[in-house]
Amino acid sequence: MRILAAWIVRLESFCFDLWHKVETRATAIDFAGKLDTSRGFWYLPTRPRVIRRVLRDVPSQNNSETVFIDFGSGKGRVLLLAAEHGYKKIIGIELRPSLHEIARQNLARCKHFPQSIHHIELLNADALDYEFPDRPLVLYFFNPFGNEVLRQILSKLQLSLDQNRRDVLLAMVSSEFDELMTSSFPQFELIDRSRLRSIYRHNPSEAR
Image (tube, rainbow, N blue to C red):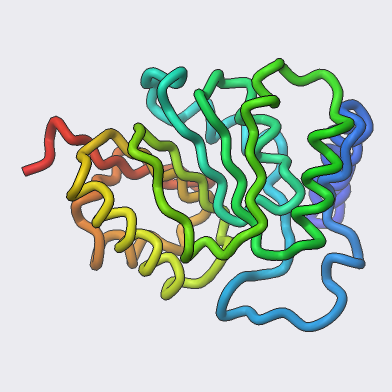
């Protein structure tokens, strides 16, 4: 059954890339060479059907005024699917230049996506250096880095929220960070959890 499941995942990714004229699958090249795992992990994209389900599960808000940010955006698969949800702006932050370049090429040649893909901005940058925009946010994490890096990023986010309170949703695709969120960031309320993801919210109307 595991072998069958693995082949189904591969087929899903292959069909996604073929239909949209992009390259978002993980390849042997992505696992070549050394990697500083204290800053990030090997490229492993979320399955398209999982991404769609997570984005569907994010509570509705005024997406036309909301910025969507994918931390560790890789080759851009999440960004392309986020374009289906009408966000004001979609930002992908990726540390590795090789993945950033592939994402740039994917945006240039992709097919069958809404015009909102033109609202996508790709940043080849360290997530720790990113300054959050003063708008409502949806932040997407699929294990892009370890707990310590996430702790620093969320601490920076909290400082931004202290200066400008606004609605912020965190979509954590895995349960790797649940303990960190509970112990260190109780101001982000867990509003929904499933086997696939946890969704946290900082709602200014409920903040003390």
